[in-house]
Image (tube, rainbow, N blue to C red; front, top):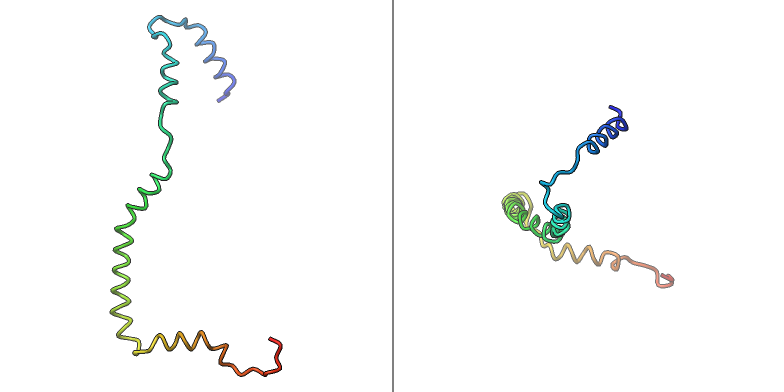
Amino acid sequence: MDLNKLERKLIAASRADAPSDRVPYAFEKRVMAHLTGRAALDRAGVWANALWRAVAPCFGIMLVLSAWSFFTGSANAPAADLSQDFENTVFAAADQDQPVDSTW
């Protein structure tokens, strides 16, 4: 459809129709004031609402995964001292024998 032709038809139709007295005085100003008077979107409120709605599913997923790791992890893994493994990993570089004349 030709937009210029449509625009000309609409302008011609609006010019042919005379304004009536049925429209109240300053109607367009009241409509525009109503439109500009709307409250702005509170982005922080929308974000907080979404986070609060996500609390219950996240908590449920956390419980399921915690139970799964508790019941399957203790049955398959031998009892190991995690603190000793951590200490060995941290001090692995310090335990290496390095020459005394090293500049590093």
